[in-house]
Image 1: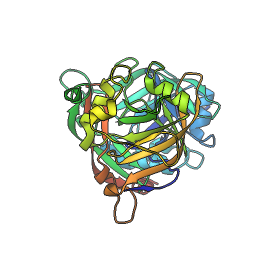
Image 2: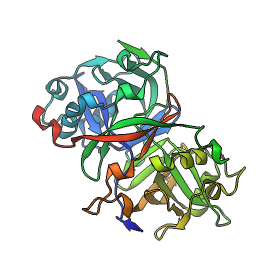
Image 3: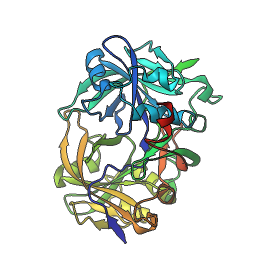
Length: 185
Length: 185
């Protein structure tokens, strides 16, 4: 038996995205969002309400970064989602996080978060969503495997459970894509 | 030190989405996709190439479901991503999965997958992405907690790692949203 819940913004797994931008004054800012995902091979989509400082910053500077919150920085990511830059202009400083200018786009990379998409604004959709073109993905050496590529277990990304307002961390490897289903062919 | 990887479709955590549709002939079909996310409080976005049977089905019938692949059906979800309905018209049957007509939209719910978004097509964007309006979320009673709402640990959603073509399962609860960051205020 299934139970019906009506229309809900539930999604499994939902990401915890830390959006880094510069304000008109050049001050780095960041906010946390959970509604978004890949929009194409080199595109990402974010649903941010227009009242956020980040929204104005993206409009103004035409760029942003998307970092994935990890287990080690859960408190910091949660803080960046709790507090508005309209109320606390130095959110990053308060969170103890470090903004470093991206070498690719006009937006700050947050040094402590291990993986970031560095994006140019492609457009705002008619619905107000932000579409970014991913110009570069950067990852901290601490999360690379011996083959030089990022490793899920080292990143330890967290996920937001919107049903219960809880965070979960990614667990163990359970299979191989384009492989495990082949036996059903 | 950070390493630059250029433009990559990497995202943490990336979902494993099983898209259920009916063909013009009323036959249920499903495919697996990883590029997509929430687009609004009652909206979801999918990036599906136009060559997929699913894309035509959505255009034709104006509806689809999004089920989240879980650990128990990893093989089945992987199979649905490996094989095209153009080659195997009875993918669901081959995968041993059961299509049940949604009571809300003109699309099949896959009985074995515990949580589904039942969606009406809102539009195709200029970029060809599918935007759906979530009319109902249904969840199997087996994944509900005593409070009657879905529980992450019972759902055990999987995530796709596009760097290594691997699947991971969601792990343990590590914090509370809108709460754990409050101490930094």
